[in-house]
Length: 580
Image (tube, rainbow, N blue to C red):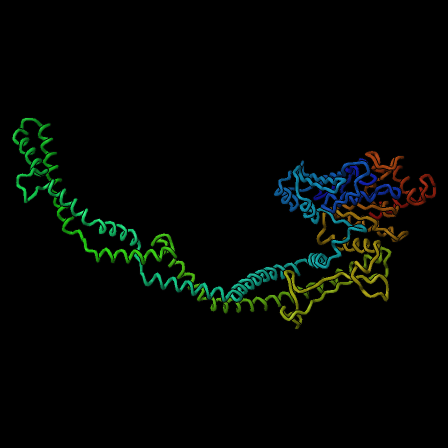
């Protein structure tokens, strides 16, 4: 399957077309028919499929909406296939189904591979699918930026390599400029931030908190605040365990446990179970003695000094002042201090960073200047070749005196980069402004093609450009409307020949009224209206053999049965076949 070939379109309720199917094929297809039969609706339909503006006036009177459906062959792995799959579309046996609906109220919907998608996605895919050239569809290559892109692709590696290097350097320069702007324009804010950090760090350093200190002090304050109650409870527990020296008659736990142990000790040899219990009582006696000793030590060590309590509360107040400002606890305060110190180091190093970035920026600007000059030189050389080739094509397209040229210029800018000894403005594609100029006849000054060419001339210029361009960067399908406007005779034959030449490397669809052009087509479609003025499904037919001769005769003389016209039509077909 040929990459990107438009295989079929179904058009419903669009203009004069009620319901028609346009079957297309690779190579050169000519669409012919009487004036007003709806040939141009083919171009309009394709424009809608490719994301063109939806005009509710196109909807057939009495219909609620117009629908255009297309089937485009797309090879897996191509840019179009990948982008469609990213949008959730599915290929149907190697083809992409596209649908566009326009309501009479002006609403528009688009579907791609069975999925609803934004209309903008169709326009995004259009550049890789079809190049449309018609009286109102020339806007793409009329834009200087598109003309520069076309010239760059024609120039090939001579521009591609330095342009890639330039683009990388340009992006880095933009990032540097943004960082420098941030550093310099926010100097006051950064100075204020640094002062706040220094104050906070000094405040924390003055208090010098230790990790976990807040928890330790909280526990100590709780103990000191209840010192008398704690001492009294410890003393009472000690007396209960070890006895009261002032009351020798009082019973204590140590005496009782000792008596229990002595009672069992005398008989333990007679029963192992009782011996085990005696051992356990011995362990209790040891534990009671240990606890009693620790209670005595606790009471002795308990500090009930109110001065120590005051010191603890004062320290806790200092830590609380820090946690109110810098964190919920001492650990968070210390984390803030660590991060603040790192940030302060960064802020204090900004001056050095500004110097480094400025030096790098200056070096990058010098590099951009060199690369931009390389781009200008490569574009200038390619522009001369491209213009000469297009001019040579125009000589055979009824524009023998027309000359095409490129204006490659720069705009002075004191803040720009140096190219050709001047400071000029620059952008992501270099410093060059590229514009295609046309001088339609001797003595006429070269003017932008949008202003220097009529509609018919513009189509021929675009045809010449595409023929020259086809060898370097062809799109899968070209659609021309009125490319033959204002010409006839030998010039028309040359237009047909050029279209046939273009069709060797791409699919070419041409809406034409010239038999000299149609004769060169590999396939000819006839658009006919019924008696009620509409084009129906049977109104778009493939012409072959005798039918094609009759249609060419009609186009030549308006008389299908004229023997002279028939002879001329057969001669045109024979000439075209021989030329191919």
